[in-house]
Length: 397
Ligand SMILES: Cc1cc2nc3c(=O)[nH]c(=O)nc-3n(C[C@H](O)[C@H](O)[C@H](O)COP(=O)(O)OP(=O)(O)OC[C@H]3O[C@@H](n4cnc5c(N)ncnc54)[C@H](O)[C@@H]3O)c2cc1C
Image (cartoon, rainbow, N blue to C red):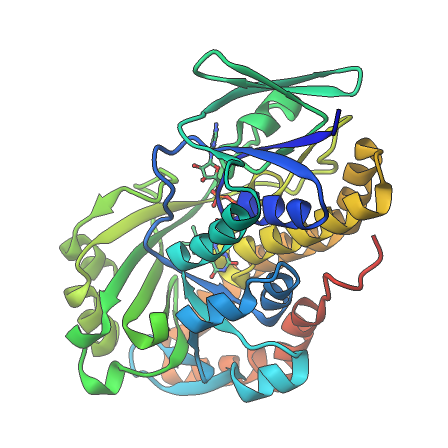
């Protein structure tokens, strides 16, 4: 009988893992709790290393056609709008790293991954299957579903996100610590905005205690808005809790007019409490491992959470290809290749909190000195070059 890999969670990480394994000729079944296959309507930045991973999965060109190649990334000061170039996302990124920096609508990313899975294995995805727990015995793994069904396989990947049941079953619940920050999220139709804001540029607006990241999606039809504030009265980690425009505007009182325009024109604004979790020392037990946010949840300040899940998936596929029928060895190879670099990114993202929210940003004079130092070309290369150069297709596995 042929061996089978079970995947808990059909989000970005789970679908990418399924695709990577199917492309290596491995049989997979994916169990997703949602009733219908969909992603939250939000944006995600995919840096060159993430696009390299998508290319290895065979879906980069399809995603690029739906997305936005932003020309550059800028730093702007919260009140005056003073502008600094952060990096060239277009021609320079492509020349330097071989891939551009894309700004992507999350449903488009999930769609290209799931279409590719569906084309190769039309019946691999099982919806309305909520995982309750997992167990393993003598090389066999069992996924226990809430509907009472038990599914047996030869290896199991927990790709069930930040509130993972697989991690909880194996390692206990991750201790989440509220970071003291929450993010406002919205997607604004670009045609609601004045002409000077309809730019193919990604911007990090930075200020003392808060910052706003905005970038175009869908070839410039939409503008993604994520506004992070230090605030402790909201502590729920959720993609779907709505807040009010007035509450959001109050958090950005005194900020530049463009920020006010974005908030005023957002059809809906959602609230997400940002939680920190310490990196894990190990992800794999026997024939069960974790992937994506289930094992390395991160603050979003390096924009690498989804990218890490895509890279995990490609490395997982290579580890299976290198390990033959020995699935336990494949999981150990995968973990060994990924655990240190993901830890470094999670810690790097946390370190950006202070950089984005520094008190020096309060006045224009101190801000200029601070930005010129923290976002000098050398400082940027030091912080990002190792991330963008990482090559999932060649790192040892
Ligand atoms: C505000 C914000 C901005 C971000 N911006 C970026 C960015 O620009 N770039 C970037 O790379 N990353 C970004 N991220 C991070 C990114 O969203 C995550 O890292 C990414 O979604 C992780 O993918 P995943 O597949 O591991 O988890 P998820 O996307 O959470 O998917 C998990 C899946 O498992 C399913 N599931 C959960 N529990 C169960 C269960 N018990 N049984 C069955 N199925 C289950 C869920 O329904 C879901 O489909 C951002 C995050 C936030 C909060």
